[in-house]
Image 1 (cartoon, rainbow, N blue to C red):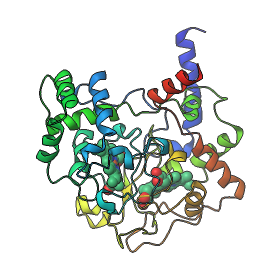
Image 2 (cartoon, rainbow, N blue to C red):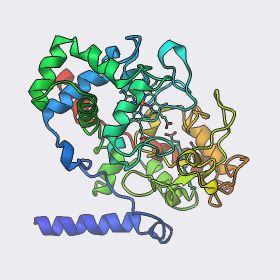
Image 3 (cartoon, rainbow, N blue to C red):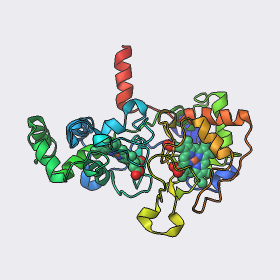
Amino acid sequence: MNRYGSFLVRLVFVLSVTALPLASSWGDPLAPLPPSPPVPSEDLETPSKAALGKTLFFDPRLSANGAISCAFCHVPAAGYADPKQVSLGVGGKRGGRNAPSVLNSAYFPLQFWDGRAGSLEEQAIGPLTNPLEMANHNYASIVARLRKIHSYRVAFYRVFGAGISIDRIGQAIAAFERTLVTPDSPYDRYMMGDRNALTPAQKRGFAVFRGKGRCVTCHNGFLLSDKGYHNLGVPQTGPLSVDVGRYAVTHDPADKGRFRTPTLRNVALTAPYMHDGAFRTLGEVVDFYDRGGGKSRFVKDALIVPLHLSKQEKSDLVSFLESLSGETAQQKSFRASRSR
Ligand code: HEC
Ligand code: HEC
């Protein structure tokens, strides 16, 4: 088949799986992950910048007590999320929220459960001075610490042609984060036309996701997130008694208790779930939706209603969620080198 022909077959296939009546009336269409996330023109990417960012991401010397790296809470083996319900920072201080995955976060225009950070560059330096995370007194103290390390002095000059600064630390980490993308999940292969990429249970679960389960009303587009904010009535667990969510950013009373719809990519790897890590398994999450979410002291989203799913439909839905896990290019080449 010529290239044009195979493109048409793919297009028809993608339309046929996505353009169901329900799906087409909500948000962006479901789609495979674009191969690379957007890059700001003032922070163009180079492989050496991403490599420096990777070193910084895994370096506990970035924290006030020298014990906590970004990877301490964004654990590669846990899909770059935190397997602890809420994160422990310097000195064992507990934050109020579960650390989301950093995988594919470069595709989100706004970062965090409440969307309070604009760019990855801006986000990347936030944890450094957060008292509940890496707890540095100020940016100057961390820059001074890194300037004493010969290999960093050399690396920053090589990458930026300039010395160490807080902005360049943020740019390097953001460049690394933009390599943490997972475009090759079974779901992506299916959406690109490989009909055998999903198991029969996953295909049935996908139908529940778009149909009876109404998941696609909020989990849509290539991230399986509408990038919007909703209140599902997730039980508030962990150290906070109340978390107002998006309201803290907008001060719009309607935003009380609303949290960003997370991407569902790699969700099978990133337990526990929700902004406060309230649920331990995907089965618990599906049960929660099935009973129509939880109670909330704020206004709950009208889309969250009892679903009356059968046992089979629930387990198919979980199977579908498991098809959304992919590998980064680095994980892939690591695996290939081990099997050689
Ligand atoms: C002590 C644990 C901890 C450390 C250390 C930490 N984080 Fe986080 N991270 C979190 C938590 C908790 C959140 C969610 C906070 C929120 O939404 O209010 C988060 C959110 C994020 C997000 C937002 C993801 C998204 O999709 O919204 C990114 C990106 C991120 N962290 C990157 C980093 C980087 C880079 C570092 C190192 C400089 C780092 N984190 C260090 C706990 C941590
Ligand atoms: C009204 C919009 C909406 C609908 C409908 C919806 N979700 Fe969600 N989903 C969200 C929001 C918002 C969160 C985060 C809520 C929080 O933490 O308080 C979330 C969280 C999740 C999580 C946890 C992800 C993580 O990283 O912690 C999973 C899994 C999930 N949803 C799956 C589903 C499934 C399956 C369905 C269909 C049965 C569904 N969602 C329907 C908006 C929605």
